[in-house]
Length: 618
Image 1 (cartoon, helix red, strand yellow):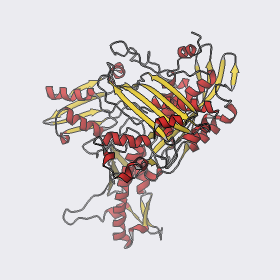
Image 2 (tube, rainbow, N blue to C red):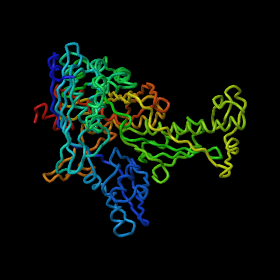
Image 3 (cartoon, rainbow, N blue to C red):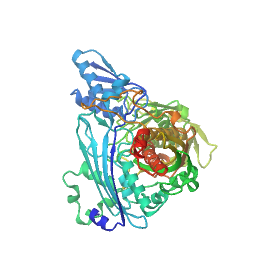
Image 4 (cartoon, rainbow, N blue to C red):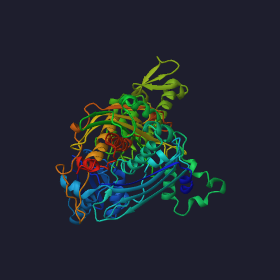
């Protein structure tokens, strides 16, 4: 579209200019790297979300062939994007090469916070317009990212552009990365969504107020629906892959419709907005913009809503593989490379394997993190694990299951393998369920005249994922009920409802942990967390005494998590990703509720001092 035309078509236009401070990953666990050389081969033991990508970087850093590098990813605490590929890991390998002895580098907590990475400092200038009926006419965003001394981000998947821009006929998005004297900016959980997403949500709220619409209704009217174009996705595709003018190479008849070829497959915020509004009591507590529903002296209570959207693994960023082996005793060995940092990935991948194969969960053994034995994978980043790694696990198991049923049909049923299935490790006939045979019995019939008896069936993932113009996203809508003390500036969260559409829920408890974890980190960004730098770029609060994180005591004791399970055709059993949309929904929900309580917008972090300054009391 054309932004100038969008302005002309608008009855209302709003503008924001928001500066965001830098959030720290604030890990509770430290990391270490141990490197050892044996001849021309290097092995690195460390914590990593993406062992395969770390191996690629390691081989390049120490100038060896890829096959001469090995990474063994060790279990760690929370990561949030911090333990991906870090310079100190390469330093350990280079020192070990120099001294020809094993070298260990272990960071202190303070070194983790002061020297590795931090969320980018960012600034968003934006304009958004709508008609009198609340229909968005255009969105125009200019965004700056502070990369620090040697970061590399110029653009990033700011999916709120898709969330709010899909139905707008006109739009523009410009992102610029700049270098400064600060510590490197890194891809912290919800990169871009937490910052620029909050600014875009604020513009939407400002428009909703101008037209006199409830913010829930405004979102229901304007946010992306299945089949709508993913505008930011195709723009990103051009930027990453079409430097030579890919669009100009297209036939004339495709040039105008090309952007429309990328669209949302399934899911949206519609159902989860309705669920969350009902759970928080929105109908009774929403009194209008800048109107608290309860006032007691200096204390004012109000509600707010915020939404988030994120990809399900980067569509253009390589494949993820899995290998599964069915052994002679009927057990299964799954090899897949995921990060081992407490997200439950090993459990959910094993669940996918067990469900696909029809084999008890206890018979699944997963091997992960060792690049010598596990196939290449993007790992656990960019909300990849369930959707893309799960797809690899799913298709590898389908391949192995097909081979197993073919063998069973040939040796025991003398019939069509399509008429067979597996349940609880028992192969049975669909036509005659009483006709059964165990997996070990079938496996004992395996033979290879040239090589002797075989001891396993090996299944490999189908790669790449099926080509499609329909891309998956996961969605979050968060609702907060809070109280602001206008004398002290203290904000107290009273109630919290987090709703999520991640497709089929594979493991409810793990999904709940992802959602509440995202909400707490997002709330910390909104209320407390910010790094302080001196004029030389050094961090002055690199510890959990001076850097304030949200504690469990600061969050409602019984937050509610509600799921919507819209089926995703490509995902394993209809599942999508889950990890990053929740963190994006929390800050705008809290910001809106504070605005409704005190009538003034306050930028994050909304500390008591900032609240009192906004109220002009100090």
